[in-house]
Amino acid sequence: MAKAPSAPRNFESAVAELEAIVREMEAGELPLESALERYQRGVGLLKFCQKTLEDAEGRVRMLEGDDTVPFEPGAGGTA
Image 1 (cartoon, rainbow, N blue to C red):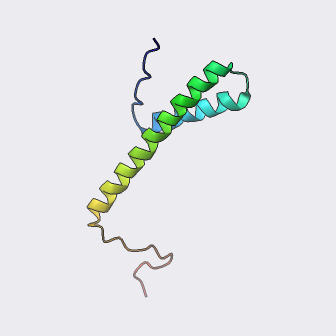
Image 2 (cartoon, rainbow, N blue to C red; image 1 turned 135 degrees about the horizontal axis):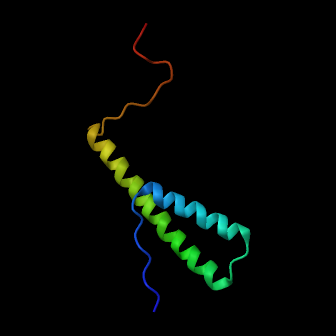
Image 3 (cartoon, rainbow, N blue to C red; image 1 turned 45 degrees about the horizontal axis):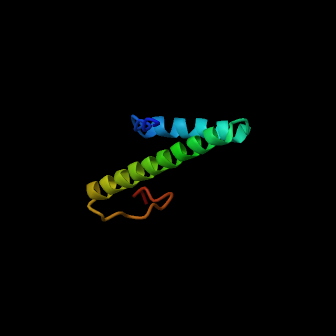
């Protein structure tokens, strides 16, 4: 039985691993079973990244009190 892949250390390492998987798969030289395993790992990494970004967005909303103001270029408060 194959051992479960380890969780990424952080968002940046997950993105780096995901980029490496994409390069490997785009090269088209992986045997089918290896390609499927890499694809499955990529899906897991993608879910990890999405969850991490959702959590970060939630933290930002909490810090801002959910009263975010749309960004308007040039609106620096000087008249």
